[in-house]
Image 1 (cartoon, helix red, strand yellow):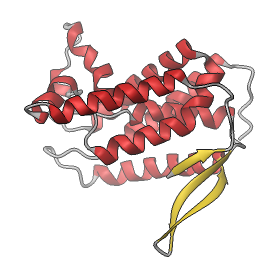
Image 2 (image 1 turned 135 degrees about the vertical axis):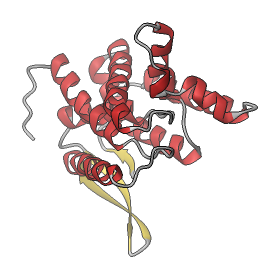
Image 3 (image 1 turned 60 degrees about the vertical axis):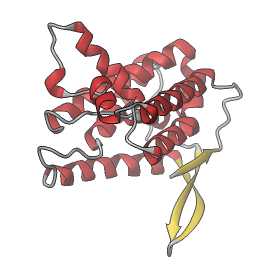
Image 4 (image 1 turned 120 degrees about the horizontal axis):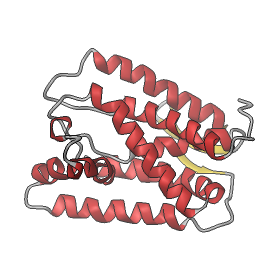
Length: 218
């Protein structure tokens, strides 16, 4: 779990902060709704509800990014976004960063949908945040990241290069996704590992389209 990076952007990340605030406000609305299941099914991304002939159903690709399955889900997502989002926002600028975030989230959902049970809602910001991680790997592979890990069950903070932490994270998503294919049922969802991997790769591609002169030295 990342705690912070040693890579100050020297700018207040207003868009990153705004995305976090919107996520928290919608989560409060979600848990305060009379029927959480109906709320999630209305605004989450359900494969059987998508119709290319009805544009209104496609808006759920965006609304689903702002829903979460619980306190731990939103807390971990927002922590990742806060640690890595400011630098990508500073590199791209506010408008381009917001578009980068949303497009990365949509691509992540498209990758995950074939692996998600047809009637199970897909929710969460992790696909969009994974795009931010992919962008960070390209731009700042040598940045130092403080991460919290259990050593003999004792929480310990160590510092590792961003390239190590992010590539390790990506590999874990791929392996976990492959394992999940064998245990997932038609009625129960799980962690969207393929959304994480798809969003990450989308972030790598998008950041290079925006900054084509940067070499992928890693």
